Length: 109
Image 1 (tube, rainbow, N blue to C red):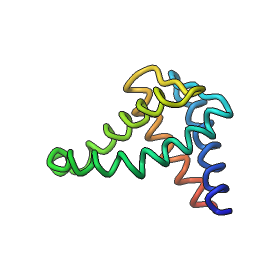
Image 2 (tube, helix red, strand yellow):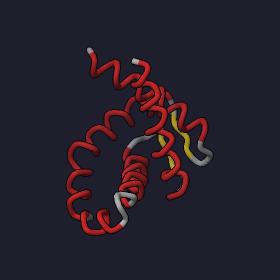
Image 3 (spheres, rainbow, N blue to C red):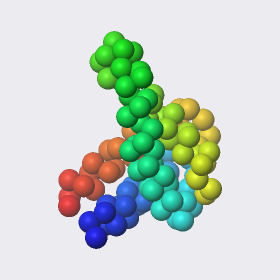
């Protein structure tokens, strides 16, 4: 039950972030699908990419992780129908805003 609530809160956060960032569009169903796809990407693909880019991540003191997050958002944009990202910078800003909105909602809970 907690997982479903977490996914619904994340879907609302995705809707808010898409509303704030120009160049990102998402439908209500697309937001729900995007939550699941981003969860799967973060479970299976992100750890592998983090390990492969560990030297540059250490060199940039972890800031390269923001670029990885933006690229994974763009990957999700190719996979999920109903979610579109116009380019790298909207994906970069979307990842940052999504992180902040999720953090805010989960701090309230």
